[in-house]
Image 1: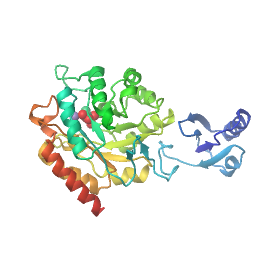
Image 2: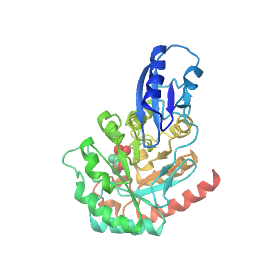
Image 3: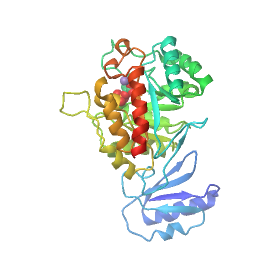
Image 4: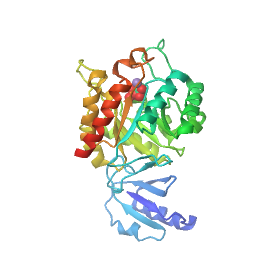
Amino acid sequence: MIIQLEKDISGHLKDEVLQNINNIGYKTMEVSTQFSDYLVSVGKKEFDIRKIGNLPGVRDVHRVSDAYKLVSRKWKVQPTEIDLGDGVKIFRGGMALMAGPCSIEGEGQVEKTVEHLLKNNIKIMRGGVYKPRSSPYSFRGLGMDGLKMWHSACRPHNIKIITEVMDAEQIEAMYDYVDIYQVGARNAQNFTLLDGLGKVDKPVLLKRGMSGTLDELLQAAEYVFSNGNEKIILCERGIRTYEKAYRNTLDLNAIPILKDKTHLPVVVDPSHGIGLRKYVAPMALAGVMSGADGLLLEVHHEPEKAASDGQQTLDFAEAERLYAKVEKAMGLR
Ligand code: PEP
Ligand code: MN
């Protein structure tokens, strides 16, 4: 059960609501986000929900039996819109393009990418400065110095930055330089990281775990929300299956199903989803037609020379052909 409290509820009235829920035998967790105050109560007993709904100080109450609650559409039918400022928004029914290299490599690369984004009217640049790599000997990113350099290059143009945070300890230092924190597939169930991201007021993009179910993805989102941050975007990036012909299996079934289950925006990452440059564009378009609210794309001025994931990265000309097709596909939805 979710109980939304009036914004200015007194301590006394809140105690009374808590007492009433306690009397039914439900356990309650208090959730305070940047937008509202909630009580999330869990219990089995049947009772007349109006008993709680009619209490003074209660704005709204709903029964949600799923393991995830606040991110469920059973609680909030109205879609969540992510506002990044300067008119840049990620929202249900829209098509937020986020493009850039797998890894931030240096000033020259960043400048070329910014130029490419400006030319194509793309407002969000992706890139990693902390890279989760299978081998410790691979390039692991430029860290905070790279992020600051990248930020300086984007700010004058109001280009927003999405980048991966790998550890709860990095959250604070990164705060002033990011617009969206990305949680990578390998960290999809890093609950201390999710707890930490719930305590900041910046959007968080959650990638589906390598072998994560949709329920697990939604519960990861519930971690962030229940810690206080409602600004969440979900991302399908492929799951690991028995198939070896490509890097991952992009599970586009997830898109309409997630959009049914949650009010959060859902985007697709076809680059990691298939892992082969040649097939990124068709899968991106399939993502658009599946109802995605955005695309996360790896692009590089010279993919052959990229420090990571070059094999799945589009060059600028390929990317431009794709953007034009995405626009056409949007007209068919
Ligand atoms: C990335 O976006 O470059 C990345 C490492 O993604 P994922 O966590 O989906 O593998
Ligand atoms: Mn990558």
